[in-house]
Image (cartoon, rainbow, N blue to C red; front, side, top):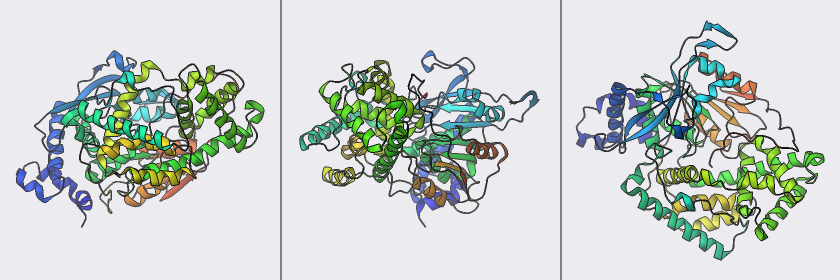
Length: 537
C-alpha cells in the first residue's frame, strides 16, 4: 500500500495516537512526526483561540473586518521549536436573510478561503460578503481569510530587494537567442541564491504540505471541529492535500479552478500544460476582439489582431511607452486577459489606442507601479519557494530548453515567460520533496464540490477531471465553453446555485453537472474600471 493511501485510511487515528507516541516510533510511518506535530499545534491553537480586533492599517480593510493571528510551528516535525504567526481576517455571519432582514438564518460556522498563488493573500475575503452573489453565504458563515506562511505579514518571505523587482522596460522574445537564454539562466541562479541568503534555514519550510498543516491549525484556532473550506487555483492543490491528510476533519470543501494533483504533473509538467492552454485562451481573446472590429479597429480576424499586437511589441522594443512599458510589460498585461475575460475590453482598448498614437491607456494598464513592488516581490518569492520545494524539477538546462523550444513552436504566447518565472527551481539550493499522491477511498471523505471552467488556461480542465477521480465522492460542475480562472460567486447563476446548494444545504448534483457559459464581455471603447485582482500563475 502506498504511504498516501495510509494517511487517508488512518489519518484520524494517527492524529490522536501519535501525539503520545515516542519520537523514535514515528519513523515507521512517513510524515508521522509532522502529523503528530500538527496535532500538538492544533490542540494549542484550540486552547488559545484567536483574539480578533482592529485590523492594522496596512491591511487596508474596513472596520467591519476584524483581524488576529494564529501561531504555527515553522517545522511541524518540531512543534516545540520556532513559531511563526499567520494573519487572519474575519467577518461574523450576519444571520440575516438577504431579502428579509427580520428572518434569522442559522449560523453554520466558519468558511475559510484561500485565493491561490502560491503567494496570494486571502485577507480581503471577508469583504466579499457585501456582494449580492455572496450574501446568502455571508448570512450563514463567518467569512474567514488569511495570509499563508510567507505572505504579507505572515512570516514574510523575500528573495530580492523590492526596489529592483520591477525590471522595466523589459524584452519578451518569442524565440529567444542563445545569448538571451544565458542572461536569463544567470538571473535565475542569482534569484535562487538570493532566496537562500535572505531566508536561510527557514526556506525549506515553505511548502504545500505545510500550508495544509497550517490550515488544520487555523481550523482548530477558529474553534471548528470540522473544516469548511474554499480554495481557488493553487488553493485547490493544498486543499486536496488537506483532504488526503485530514479527511476526518473535513465538513465541506469547494475546489474552484482545480489544479491537477497528479504527482507526475507537479509542478514542471503542469507549467508545460499551462502554456499550451494559454495559447488557446489567447486565441479566444483575439477572436472576440475580431468580432468587435467596429469598436476597436484591430482587424476582423484573429490573425489581424495578432499582427497588431506584434506591431505594438516591435514599436515598444524600439521606444518603450512612458519609458517603462516594453514588450515584457505588454505580454504580462495581455496574459491577464487569459485569466479573466473581464480584462478583454480594457486590453483591446489599450492596444487600439496605442496603435492609433495614444499610449496612455497602455501605460496605465501595463506600467509597473512602485507602490506595488513590495507585495509583488513577496508574492513571487512565496510562489517560487513553494513550487521549488514541493517537487523534483529538471536540473539540466538542456531539458528545459528542449521541452520549451518544442512547445514554443505551437504555443509561443506564454511558453518562455513561464520558463523564466520557474527557472530558479532548476538551481534551487534546498532539497525537494516528493509530492503526496492524493487519494481518498469510499467513506473516508465527505462529498466535495469541484468547479471548473472548460477553457481555463491557468488551471487546465484536465486537472479538475483528475481531482474528481482521486477524491472519492467528489462532484464536478463545469462551466462549458468558458475560461475565467475561478468561477465561484461570479456572473454564472447556474454555478452559483450549485455552490449555494452545497455550502448551505449540503446538496450536490450527480457525479457531474454542466452550466452554460456566462455572457461574453461587452465591448467598450472608453474607460472602464479594471477587475479588482488577478492571481499569479
